[in-house]
Image 1 (cartoon, rainbow, N blue to C red):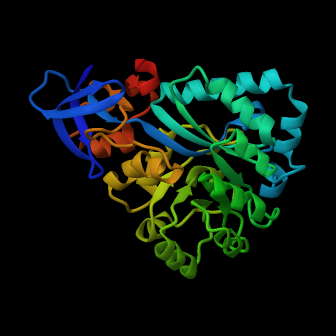
Image 2 (image 1 turned 135 degrees about the horizontal axis):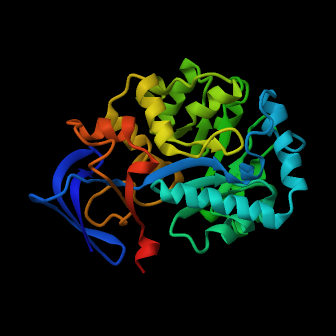
Length: 341
């Protein structure tokens, strides 16, 4: 398979006119040459933090404080999850996965509520999808029998020592929410030595120093943080300290569109457009512990082809156009390894 266009290559996000050659789900060559198309080829997007079980509760819980909306075990979200029949939950989750795929998401990380059953639901709705779902389970350590890692709700909610140790023993990632409502749970989150942290809206100077020292990635979810009313994360400072990825968080109050996230970040923070695109691709893959997120030889062939005759027409700075203007309507093709079999 050969895909032609203006190709965004490598972690530097350089733009090269040419051809990407794909064999057996891998990129085998990126060839610079003149081509007869203005299409743009980018790495598939990575949505590094979602809760797609929330798909059953869209636009509910608005106006409630954070804990009343999402905190386990008796928040609005958890009551909705318990009261919704399993087949309805799966159908709603499947629609969200398909939406993400159609918009160019190749990988997403999902913090799964409802223990083993919740992880089984995610497996069921993604088994026939080319999108790679990283299932970060919850509940007892046994969830790691079926999950790819563990997703802890937060250090103030419960103790996760046993779950952390079991994840480490199995060589699976442990992620935890931290600093979303305030800074009170950040020290507790760091104590688990997680593979990544989520949110860090209220990161203090000492937390930024610790992120730099430990090289712990952070998944930022700026739009959802504002919708829930917890504040605006210090993304520029986080980027200076560590690897920062992007997530869209819960589906209940936030559309799972990475395109909206990149536009928001590019316009609300003083960051290079190349950095914003890294946050939406390779940094997310790195935080979740999966391959890819970049166009280079030997990488998995997760690619998105964007039409060159719509939002990206007449844009000289291709990367700026991608992060600030591109959207679902510009996606011409989504190429993922599982769909090439």
